[in-house]
Image 1 (cartoon, rainbow, N blue to C red):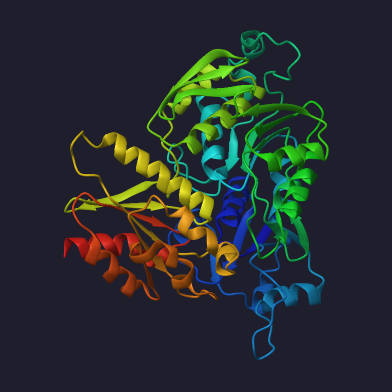
Image 2 (spheres, rainbow, N blue to C red; image 1 turned 90 degrees about the vertical axis):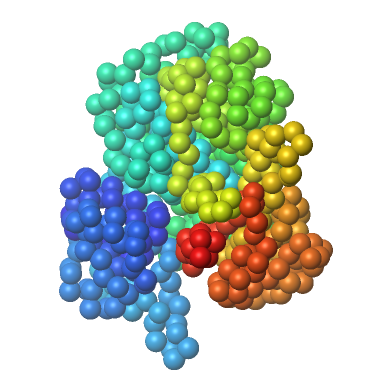
Length: 491
C-alpha cells in the first residue's frame, strides 16, 4: 500500500516509516522542520518528504494516512487550522489511522512482541534486549526510540526464519530448576519495541503501548511524567494496568521490585506469570558493582556481566533485559555474554569530543529523576577513575527543561535535587513559563540561567577548565550546543 505519514520526522514515526518501507510499502511523509539527520535517513530509504502540513498533499491519494501525535485540531491566532492537511482528511472522509495502530495491524500481527515500558530507561533496555536476542541468533525485529550503536538503525523487521534455527532450547528452565515457569523456545518471529505511555493520537488518547499486545512485558519503573496529558501518577498507573490486561496468561511480566507504583499496577490485576528484578528478594538479583556483577536467579549465580556501562540504573536495565530474554529461551549466561558487547545507545552518555582537557558528553536526560541518575552515575565513574591524590574532576551540567512536563513547571522544584552532584549547572531557560532562576536559587552560585544558546555558551566557556566534563542534557537538538562548545573550546 501507499501510506503518507503526518509527523514523519519524530523518532517513533520515522521508525514506522522505515519498517513500512522495508516491508515493501510506498511511503511518503510530511513534517514541520524537515532537517538532518532524520531527513537524510528517510530520504536514503527512498521516502519522499514534504515540508509542512498543507492540504494540497491530498493529491497524493495514499491508501492510508498515518497520523503522528504531533498533529492536533489546534488553531492559529488568526483562526486557521495549524494542520490543514488533517482538516482536509477529515472533510474528505479519507482513511486515516495512528502510528501504533498501523504498526499493530501490519507489523506486530503474528509476532511474539517483547515490549519495554517505564518512565526511564526504555530506550536503553529495549536496545539491550534486542542485542541479546541478536547475539543468541534470533534476529529480532525492533523499534527503538533511539539508535542502538550495535545496530546503527532505530528499526528493522528482523528475520522470522531465525527462530526456527536458533540453538536456544530447553536449557533455561533446566538451569533455573523450575519446570513451572513459562520458558520455551520462541514459536513466532520476535519483535522488541519501546513501549511508550504517551498518548497515541489526538483521536486516540490511550497510551501507545496498549496497541502492542506483548507476550513479554517489561515494567522498568513508573513515576509522574507527561504533565501535559496526565493529571497524576494514578492516571499513568491506570494506563499501565490497561497494558497488563493485554498480556496473555502464557506471557510474562517482568517488573522492578523496587517500585511501589508498579506493585500498585499489578495489584489492580495481572493474569500472567510475573518475574521481578532489583530488590533483594527478586527472581533476578545483581550482586557487585554495576560495571562487573553477578546475576542471581532464585538465589543461585547463573551469569556474570562485565561491560563498559556504569550506574545502578543500567544494572537494573540489564536485569530486566536478561529476565525478558529468558522468557524466549535465552539463558542468562548467553544474555550476559551479549551485554559484555553492548555499545549503548546514541545520545546516552555519548562522548562528543575532548578539547584542551575538557570533555563534552551528550545525554538524553530531561526528567529530574533521569538527570539525577545521569549526574550521579557520571560522578561515580569519574571518582573511580581518578587516581588517589589527584584533584576531583568537576561536572558542569548544561541542560534545558525542554519536555512538555518540564515546560509546564510541574517538576521545577526537583531540579536542585537532580543536580546535587554537579559542581556547576547551566540552564537554557528559553520558552519556559516559569522562572528558572527562582527554581534553581537553592543552588546559589553553583547555578546560572541563560535565555539564549549564545549566552549559555559564554557562561559555560567562562567556567570550563582542564579536567572538566561538560554534561549536556536535553531531549532535543539543544541548538547543536555540543559541537558549538567544542568549537569554542578550540578557538
